[in-house]
Image 1 (cartoon, rainbow, N blue to C red):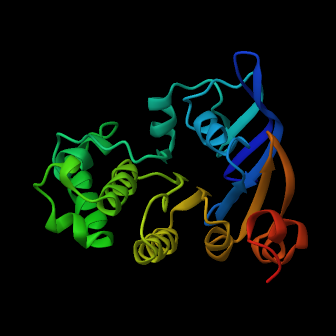
Image 2 (image 1 turned 180 degrees about the horizontal axis):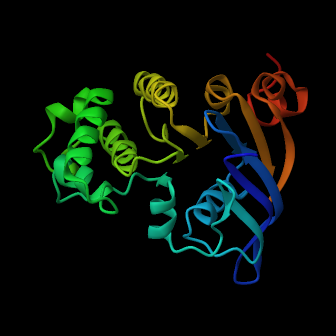
Length: 238
């Protein structure tokens, strides 16, 4: 049984259908990526999984439990955390305060302290900026903070929406190294990424969304080698 399963998911914004019956699975320990053009429905998929968008039809199951009607805070408590596109850190709060807010669903102080040390080990730059206000940090540092804050809920599945957006090539490499590291430490990841080549390089499997529907699915290496996927998303033939 898949750890996360999306089955026939339909999502609408008013009269506009953003997702038209998509189905996908994520197994425990995997990195799975969703790629596609802007407006294909990638962000809506993550927002539906995290409870920010109410599905019009279909099911979302996490560890065998239907989570499609849960409020976002209950989705976090269930074990799914979301680092959204655009970072959305709290700019007037310090790095420490942002990280502590990531653990708002938890109550065991000693475990929260352990996880603070863990995420600061993954992101040493945040340790250097620990008392700095988040709004004064660079875009790359804010992206690290957004991911670290999501990890503070100790999720089984981490949803990442465009983690490399707007970053320099050097920082993009750093972010993808961190994604691999987080996965090696035991967190399952569902990744949306504008850099399709990098996303398929880090993932084990992938799905291609086109206008709210799954157009292609398979092993990441197979998608990267597909002529149709290369032409549309990878800049042509290799």
